[in-house]
Every structure is written in C-alpha cells, then in structure tokens.
Length: 111
Image (cartoon, rainbow, N blue to C red):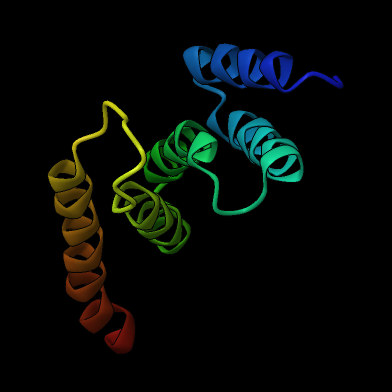
C-alpha cells in the first residue's frame, strides 16, 4: 500500500473487526507516511495521532497512548489548527491514563 488513505482504510477495517493489534500497526504506518509528507509537527497529523492514540487505549498500552495524546494535545494548542477535537476531553483521557498507572503501581511493587 503506497497511498496513506488506503493504509488508514485498512486500519479502520481491522479496528472494526476487533483486530486492534494489526490496526495499530497500520495506524502507525499511516502516521509515519504522513509525517514523511508533511513533517512531524504539521496540523495534518492530528487525525492520524488521534486514531493511533485511541487504538493504543483500546489495547491498554497506556504509556504509548499517553505519548500520543500528549503529542496531539500539543498540536491542538497551536491556534492555527481548527479540528473537531475537544482538548478538554483529551486532557481528561490523559488524566485517566495517569491515574490508572498510579493505582496499578503499588500492586506491581508487591507482586
């Protein structure tokens, strides 16, 4: 697949089927392809980062999701970007991930 739209379509199909691990690989590939086209800090990456972050949350890859959501939030703070994302919703999701890690940390130490 040489077209980023085709890669995203494949990722979405896999996600709909519940094959989140494969979907994540395709979302990562699509993000990389788009980064190579527009650069690493371009507004056009927001959709790609959002999709990747949501699949990482579904896979409970909290550390990776936190990185992706933080990157997305940084992009959204650029006033020139007009997106449908609610920055407050992303902040709340980040807080949930961080709180979950804090709750799990004591259990990991005793295991």
